Length: 189
Image (cartoon, rainbow, N blue to C red):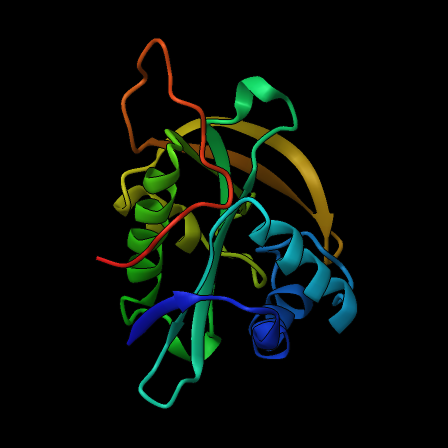
């Protein structure tokens, strides 16, 4: 498995990975699968400033992807990002997510990002057919800490879901701080 930069040529394959999360889970609160054009635009907009990476097998097939996006639109938040990660349904539990996050964090560090935040849907009941605690547990293993819960704030599949925020510091909070090098990142050793 290799970690590579996503390009717009990957749009269709990445959207195929994302589609089941929309249609069958409450992992994302999107209701409708975006069009190819809309999804391509999302990729292009993220790549202007942040890393968007993919895990590929020896045949070049995409197994999963991860990216960072703006945490908030104000200048004071430049050193913070929100992360997203999606792994192909058939590839869960194989270390793909861990490899993607390791590379994503490396790329973010190379830019000068310090705070990494994850917004994660959380099941309200013990046995939910659309959502488990898997993403929360994954982020805990990756060193993220719970910082807050928004109760019953997302509605999908005729049920309410909580949303939690988790954070991880990947750099030192120095004063003065160096400016973030948006769009200038690497995942290579």
